[in-house]
Amino acid sequence: MGIELISPQGTHSLLKNAADGYFFASDFVDQVLLSNAFYGENPVGSWTIKAVDPVGGGQGGTLVNWAIRVYGH
Image (cartoon, rainbow, N blue to C red; front, side, top):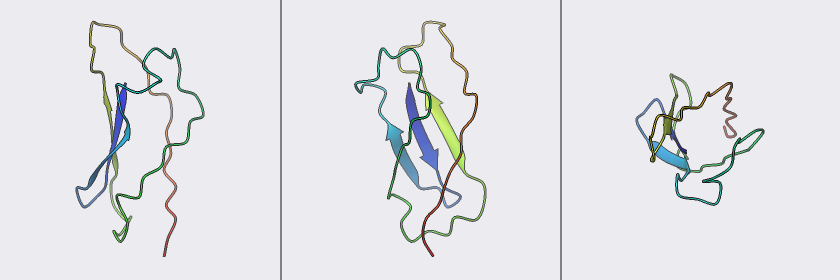
């Protein structure tokens, strides 16, 4: 699974590449993903998280919870 975060201003950041070392992991619990792609942007607004299944094949997953923490001023 790949994970992409999209800011209210439309900036995209790939947080997790689908072809990384977690490709065959059965879960991805309590992982922290970081990005500096939004440096200088105002964090106010609606953020979008996009999960990408590069393999497909009908084996779905469930995104149970996610959170975003913004550091800056």
